[in-house]
Image (cartoon, rainbow, N blue to C red; front, side, top):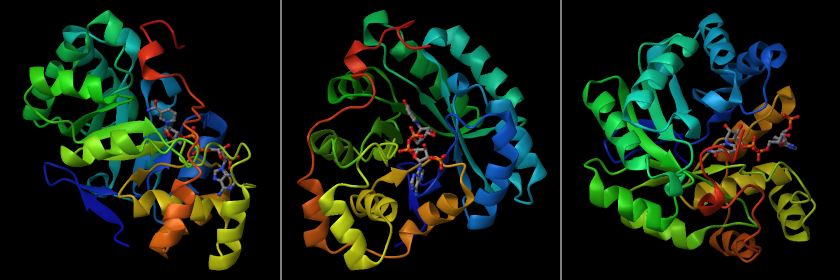
Length: 278
Ligand SMILES: NC(=O)c1ccc[n+]([C@@H]2O[C@H](COP(=O)([O-])OP(=O)(O)OC[C@H]3O[C@@H](n4cnc5c(N)ncnc54)[C@H](OP(=O)(O)O)[C@@H]3O)[C@@H](O)[C@H]2O)c1
């Protein structure tokens, strides 16, 4: 399996990135150090994770030059709007200690608040100025994407959505595939939460001599998704990165597909408004 894929503007993105949600100031440096050593080059943060500064500092301490890194962050719900998106973008750059972003995403559509179009238009301008290499969204359902694409110029490069074997999101994935929008799975491992003990996953782990986490991550990769598992445990950081080193057979991919229960761990995007999530 290839380690990178091309986004719809030809930008290369690593297929396995490092999610840093819940990694605090005490754990960021060691986690990033191990991640870089394991081979991760892509790091996914957000304003709301309150660790952009810590991530930026940790990356500066490492040996990987900026141009070899792929840094993603997101505009938080409370800051949607044309002017505040531009201001917040600059604030994120400062916290991260970088002068450009590889990927900037709208964190939630918050459709009821009616601001995601102007938010995205501000991002399009930043993209055209060369300050962002690719722009996209998170948690957009098909109807949000249709509205966005009808009213803006640049097709999002990425839609980052909750996705794991119990919430496979195949119809949304199909829509994204049709429009050349790459799907990134957030919470790709469902944070453990009983998924590793699923008999189908356990059996496949035995068959391939891989861990349950590697089986699940490989399933995502087989579907053409990007994954951004989070771990601050050194052995798991390596384990997750190594999930790219084999390939499930088609019939085994289908066995995992059959586990879907449309079971969401996070909020449904239609239920999130500005102020709902803190
Ligand atoms: N766009 C959005 O709305 C959104 C929402 C949520 C998350 N995200 C992004 O997606 C990333 C990943 O999602 P997530 O952190 O929610 O969930 P996740 O990656 O599915 O799971 C992380 C949890 O699983 C454990 N874990 C990781 N690898 C493991 C392994 N190999 N074996 C056993 N346990 C393992 C971690 O524990 P340890 O750390 O203790 O090892 C941690 O508790 C986030 O960090 C964030 O960057 C985006």
